[in-house]
Length: 324
Image: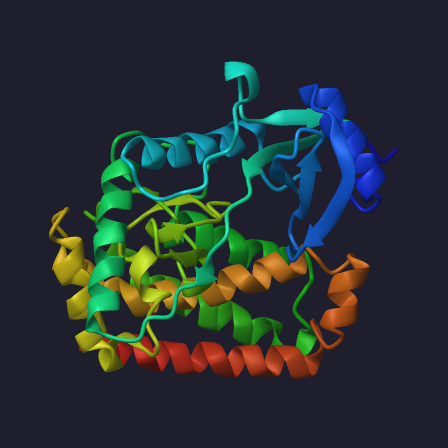
């Protein structure tokens, strides 16, 4: 018997009823879906005229504890006056609500445009922001979030892809050998490395430029525990060896607030390989979702895995060149 909460039929009327029942708010009929494949996110309005963003979390992805750790991290950033959009705690209570087996939260609506990094000053500004976020991230631990160590997260992703039969027979053995070679090559690089709470998905799409508040960081949904450099490399326009100028500017801003271990720059290309594998595992969990199949009709085919194998081979070469 399927006991999974009904997420696919979370239409506006159902969503608004759930919000009213769980929070006591009185909502208008406004419910504009916002782009989000993983979760269900709506732009809504209360009868008092307050605009709210309602975010329903995809069931089975995060536990209650993991979601609360996300909220706690954002709250720590807000307490340090870092521009973030903190979940609302109505009537002075909690920020995480539950309705019909689904967890959701509410955010005040904020406007801003995606940050464009156009000059040296912008890179330094982003570095300062990351330094401040990591000060907040280092204040507490998180035990229910992803641990971005290859022996934990990446090894699990590889095992899931192989054991669940997602790789076609033509490429299964080669995928096994390549990914385990990557693990062997990078595992020791993470020894004696600082792991703290980090944003985890820090690219320009998650940075808003607000003239009155500076750079605002959004979407802590992939918050994890990992090396601070993870929040830097996704911003780079190319591989690490081609972005030394940008990295130096990021670090100049970062170290105005927090010391950075320069030795962890060698983790950038291993982390890129880990993200490739992570994304493959993430996609494998979406294969029964009709929207995913419509948008990725070739996923899982021989052609798809041939391209992924080539990408992994190339990334191994990049890692070796970066570590020389």
